[in-house]
Image (cartoon, rainbow, N blue to C red; front, side):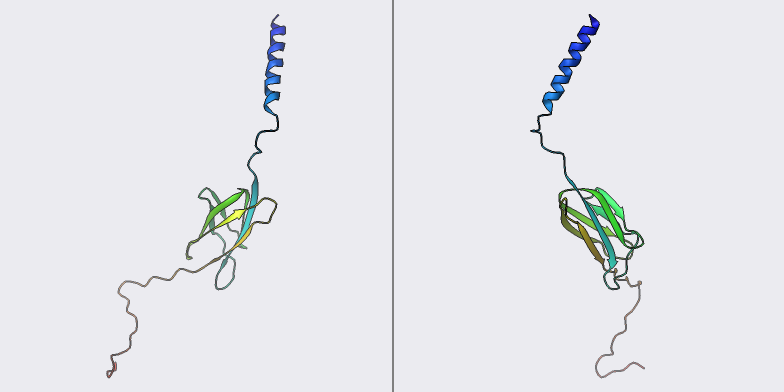
Length: 132
């Protein structure tokens, strides 16, 4: 009797689960890949060690050639920032499309050096006077 009840329960469970897969459900999220290169804006040399943050969640670090890759980026619009010591932080946005190459080139600008406190800059003497 127990075997018969188990068989009926298994058959009922199987038919319920089979009824759920009718093809009308929306497909799972689509993904794309995103790759890029981080370079110095003046010298065009690659920048290693730059931290690339995508939608404040995903992160990647540029390698010695300045390259970085995100293998699974949800399709649609995204925002990203690139940070590395000695350079200004770069922020931008893009759109990931599956089946299309999604690549960016990020050109970073060197931060202006701060002057030491108390440092004077050379000035011209007032008209009609000279420094001696």
